[in-house]
Image 1 (cartoon, helix red, strand yellow):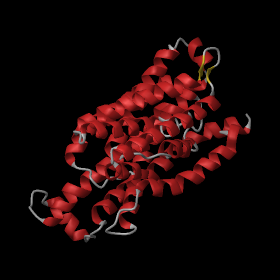
Image 2 (cartoon, one colour):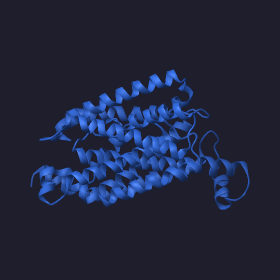
Image 3 (tube, one colour):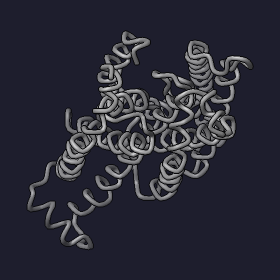
Amino acid sequence: MNKNSLGQKNKPNHIWLVFFIILALFISGWYVGLRFGAIAYSNAQVWQVIQNPLTNSKIQDVIFDLRLPRIIATLLVGAAMAQAGSIMQGVTRNPIADPGLLGINAGAGLALIIGYAIFGSMHYSLILFVCLLGSLLAALLVFGLSYQSKKGYNQLRLILAGAMISTLFSAIGQAITLYFDLSKTVIGWQAGGFVEINWKMIGIIAPFIILGLLLAQLFAHQLTILSLNETVAKALGQKTFLTTIALLAIVLVLSASSVALVGSISFIGLIIPHFIRMFVSKDYRILLPMTAFAGATFMLWVDIICRTINPPKETPISAVIAIVGLPCFLWLVRRGKNL
């Protein structure tokens, strides 16, 4: 048995260790997220509010109406973005595929800007619908430009098409923003963040994210087969085209819902799947839930850093993620074919 096969065989032995480490960070993140922010509360104050949730007080308003929906939003968005990235990497067999790098987030952003230019203000359900349309348009353009009838998806063409579409959509979005004077409306979306999250937003968008996560798990076994080789998948009787379409539809739902809820955030779908794949074998029945759990925990702690590093001001979440994401991206590029 060679070293590579031995390494793959040993990976599952680390699942429980990684799981419990993430679980510890997950639980402690809830605790820190409820206690700290622009105002820090003591253990006794937080526990008293939890024991008496219906008591009308300022602390109760902050914890249950501001911090709790914000924590839930970070978990949903982190899980959705991480899992969307993992699915993209499996479908395209491209180790650096990510909804943000492939223009899907840029498509949602452009559609959102156009929506604000036309309607002025939009209901949360309309925001979600607009983001879905924009993501779909970007995905069709990117995959249409990168697909070759005989060879399938060319990895280099896929990345180049994604970069081109992202740049084009960003430029169009900036032009529309300037022409309609939407700078104040768009700047918050571009920076990304959970400042304005409320229960109403979560009630509308959370079901779509949860549905996407559940559907992804149902297709996990098919994704494992598809990620190996298209020829092998067809030989095993899989309808690769229909499976790919279904999985990409799940990615669109997860990505557009996340963009509608929090704005433009990249790198999570790139970083988290690779981190989990270092310890977990390439079985998407295990990889997808672990990736979602790790992504949710990562986003929870990133948001905590954003609101505690310089209180009461909020640090843009995209800046914090970029500090972590850029070195990871460069490391992945340097690894090249060894991924």
